[in-house]
Length: 567
Image (cartoon, rainbow, N blue to C red; front, top):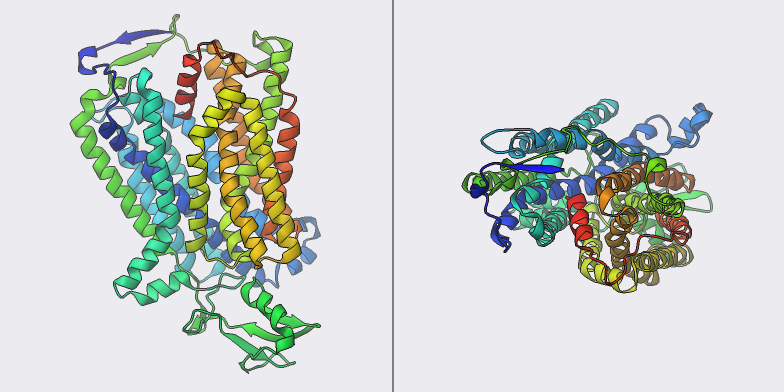
């Protein structure tokens, strides 16, 4: 591959990274991760509430299964998780297209900025309308249809500018400084992600400070399995009505001492009725206004996130106007030696040994199962926390922030460990850690119950240690795959890597949703799915024999290849 350079004087090859400039470049990526973290946290909760109500109007999911036996495997978690794979499907189809399209774009705002300037605001508008159509349209079928239309539009527009926004850093950074720059970009992405996880709590708190008590209480409201707001006492506890044998409400329920333990499980759990020996003694009250069921409306959270994203864009545009002379992509044109595009190489045609080819296939298979586990957590976590831990989404996202911080904090140690003891061993340690602690939490929750102190302790251990273990896996898988192919096949092997991971991002949530449905919609079994997928990945990766490099081997090409692949 050869390079033709124009106007090189306008793009000085500095040997020291401009951190201020790089942080400003990262504003676009921060906005992207902010929107995604909100989307992945709250959209599954909204979808679960809407589809549960849809089936409830028809007599419940069991009645639906009786009418349509062929769909007895269908469940609300499966439907929700299938919808949550749309972004990954669009990522496979559209992101490479628009990324390549931006390579050939010419404008006064450079190659990438036109896609970001147009795409981000449109994306923000669709983003805000997701909760609006979900909660303002009372006809449930129409509400779901409109919400799906908005979700599809949001994901499509996001695919237009997501690839260009991550390409800004390489455009502004010489190749020898891109590893340092990528650390900065990852920090900005992490800030956006953590901000998305905590923004629900921030909005609720600020609403209270500014006297918007209705909004503050609405965002913190407790809900039943249909996602309906339950009336609460001044202390925030759920109001429970006493029910006679005919199902009539007779007043507030006072629990006998001998039923206290069972009542606590009901009160803090997902069930709407307190049933003892087949008799309904009490039920949680549903809050209605003029006979219309009220939902937890997350619109303020989406709007605040969209405003922050647009403000980030404004700052990014101002930055580009002042710094477009440092856009290196405007000065470089790349072409192959014969002027043609490089052809894709099939695995069987690679000039590598039979054993190396076997290691590659095994590693890609292991990667597929590993990513099935990690991708299954994202769309299920908020529903898991609400159903099993009785933690509202605005607070459960704080838990995800802890997981994200643990993963990010262990990034550098995981890379160091991979160099010292080997990538494969580091990945195996991470997998064993995930299997042990995820499996331990599931076992403890089934033995002691969801609300016991022991369960909570095991959960937090699984969350923190799991984040570190996933970091050990994620940091070392791509370098291992690329090292099998060597310097000559970086692009080809990067393509193999993302084929495996994106495929898992589509199948993981769907398979996990199917398993949760088989276990009576018990979201605890998300951890069973993850543990099983990790075990399969572990068994496969133990047979991988290549992908390490010797201590005295020059790995600078590999570091740069990993950096470019991440971008």
